[in-house]
Image (cartoon, rainbow, N blue to C red; front, side):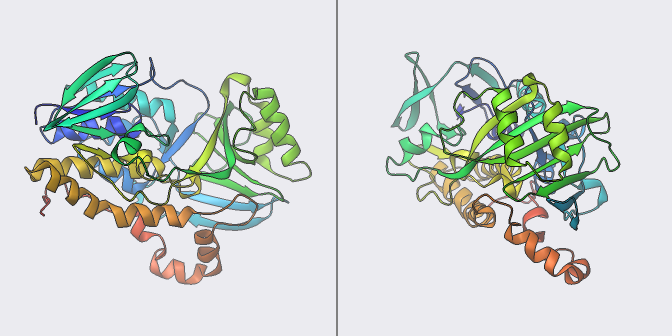
Length: 388
């Protein structure tokens, strides 16, 4: 292929472009925003399976150099009483989850993509596409770019998804926003490698403290889909204070101490299935294709898996249509199962997978978390090849 267009310069798009170059294919990333991600307090965790996928394309170092280990989830109730400790399944102690700032991951992926020969064009908002053997992408500023294949990595509100199938389902609002922030020296850091997750009487929140003393926190705020539009950091802190009033939760101290420039909020969505993955020289990766609740902690890792798997299919199967069919065959069951795992409404109740693991901790210790091994220990064999 002479040129593959990747629409979207987030985790999914940049990883896909890096994987395409690793497979010996071309890639141009078209990003709608004029610049990359900002430095506000959003963070994410790359799970063992996400690291495995990055390792397949010699890009795992991008995470390791900017992150720290996060091996356990210490769950506590509204009175700061322990509910149990969940050890996240890993292939071995050196390949477990890593936590990092979202903006740091974006920058690292963008720099690596450029180093490998990827073109990145900002200010390119996709509005249409035409298939003519190849594909031409049309952008809002009245420009166009031609290529052999268009890959939609344009997120929850994907334009590409609608171009592939105008009747495609839209993501469902979960009923809550995720509010995130970062603050230094607000909490003691007895366990640098542990998340603390609190199940309050009205909502959930949690935090992890990095080795340098910075605490990164999140809180799930039940509200209407547009209720927080334009909300200031002061208003977000007030809403969270009211939500956790009367609870004895360590995360709340971090929330109160966080400066305005390190608080961000985003609506949370779920998209269980997309009937049509590919059509007329176009396909999808990442949140454009499947949107899981943040409770799965798999959004970034699934996007990385998508990009690497798609690149393998395009590398090994000369016919593009056949390659896209192989990509769907390899990915559909897995990603839809991930979304189902996290499908829930907000509130203080433990998610189903955590309830089962804690209820049967003795069995889980003997069998290495059988409920979630399929999720975290997934392996991509880059050298193994893909067949029809």
